[in-house]
Structure formats: structure tokens, C-alpha cells
Length: 418
Image (cartoon, rainbow, N blue to C red):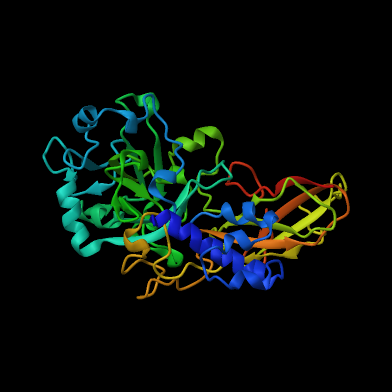
């Protein structure tokens, strides 16, 4: 059985146990063990459970929103080798900003032969490598792109090799962009965030592996930046240049689109499966996911009302009759999916114990699943909404309901009861 199939089955079993506890599946379903259990589910549950994916995303299932004309990962292997987008030819320059210089003693440049190459990065990895779980999400797209175990060397390790001395306030960085200045996609971070892992955050890394495999060109290989708490635009692909600056403000490309470039990941919920049409007074299975942002996740809630009956003076539906859904538990050891070797969390992964179990659940910066059974309803048209409540008790879309600062809009799903 393929890893992806095995872990889909695992999530289906977890969800099935939830439905069993809710009284939806007959006792006869237990008779044959795992084999044949799906056939014993009531028909209206099949679609709901079949849509649940594994916790870690298979490498070929990550969504791609790469920029470029042509997109760098579409270049021929020969061209990628020529421009430094293979492990054999990759080089990273680390220099001072010419206009607002940080004073550094040992810049890394191609011209001097001191740029960091991949073997040197792997030498650093022997003693400094870290790995952590993270969901990769675009700032203005509701659906996450994928969740994985990202591995790399902390960026601060490389920066300290340049021996910065003074006037160091920010780190600028960008990747290969077809040698076309107008295509350059750049981002930045405060020096303090790069040099110190504040608020129990994993470090910012120069990433070279995803789910135990070398980064492919599609995922930004050979090396990209990964910022644990941030949206994808901070995790620049095809990394080629790092610039240390005394400029105190961000220079991110995303500023040009009126985006809040300092927003960390938000917590929000969305629905995966609701029957579009169902018989009157028949209980309704619903599944969904929640992105766990910087403020964590306490609960997921749902609310159903007749179409058009929403209050007009309560834009965030604070006074609605929300009810709690069940957040599904973490996968068992060896059942994480995502093409991980043996489908097991690698040793020494931040946030996991020695047995590969998460130290907290739900984990920040991940995507988890939830499920709920709605009571039967009279005939009519209805609207389902889901929301999260974070660890501080703040209900979605709070505390940052604004556009361009990360998706948090309360999703609306319509269905018909006949």
C-alpha cells in the first residue's frame, strides 16, 4: 500500500470513530475489523470521509503559485545548471547593502570565490540542521498550499560567518529571477528575528529538504528561505542573495500590492465536505480543516441558518448560535503521510517528542481536520459557516479581520434540504 493511501485510510478511521461515537454508524461495522468498514458506512458519510487527506502533504500534491516568466522551475536542466539552480552549481552571496551598509568583515561573494556553495551548506548542516512542521500558505489565498517537514540550516549561522560588526537592522533576500530586474521577488526580516528565535519560534532556515527529500525546483530548490510563522512570500524560493542592511524598513515585493508584510499566520477554519442536497430531518456529516496560526487553536465551531436569515447588524456573527465541532487527533506514529520515510516524523524534529508525537495539539503553523454531525433540518435552503476560536479566546475573523493581512474571512457554504 502506498504511503498516501495508508495515511488517507488512517484519517478515515479516525473520522469514522468520531461518527461512531456520534451514533451514525451501526454496530455491525465493527465486525470485520478494518477490511470492508467503508462499505458499512451510511451512504451520506462516504463523500465526507473520502475527502480527508493525510496530515503531511504528498510532495506531488503541493499547490504552486510561483512567479516568473518563465517560472524558474520550468527551465531546462541545462539552463538551471547554468544559472545556479542545481545543487552542483548553487551559490549564495551574503553582502552588505551598498546604500545603507552593515559593516561586515567577511562578505561572501562570487567574485572573490567565497560565496556559500551546497557542499559548504551541508557541512554546516552536520552540526546545525533543524527541521520543523509548517503549513505553507499564500497571504491572500484561503486554501493552504501544503504541509510538510522543512529541513535546513538556520540563517543566523551563515550570517555570523560574515562577521557583522555594527549598523545591522534588517536582512533583505531574493532569489533567481531570469536576470530580469522587473521580475525580482524579494523579502526581508528584522535582524532580531533572524538572529534570535523569539516567542518559542523555530529558526528562520536556509531550507534544502522537504519531507525528507531534496527540494525540487517546483518547491524552490536547491535552497530557499523558510520562515516558520510567516506567509509564503517571506519564504523566498531559488535563493541566491542575502543583503545585510542598516535600513530600518521592509523592502518586500508584496508591499507594492498594499499588503501587510509583517502579518504572521492567522488561525481560520474552512469546510471540506457538506452534502449539497440532503433529505429533511436526516443528520448531516460535515468535515473541514483549520489553519493553526500564531495565536493557536482552542476550538472550531459551526453555525447553520436559513439562507437570508443572517443578522444585518452583526458582520462577524458574534451573536449567532455557534456549536462546537470535534478537532481530530494527531496521527499515530508512523502514519503521518506526505511521502516521509516510513511515514514517520524524523528524529529531533522541533515540536515533537522522541517517539515522533507532537508535544502540543493542535500544533501552531499546521493544518488540522475537524468533523461534526448536524441535526436534521426541515426542508429549505441553508447556509453553513465555520470559524475558529484561538487560544486567546478570539473568534475568527478577529483579531485581524482586514484584507491584505492574511485570509480570515468566515466561509459561507450553501446546501439544500429537501
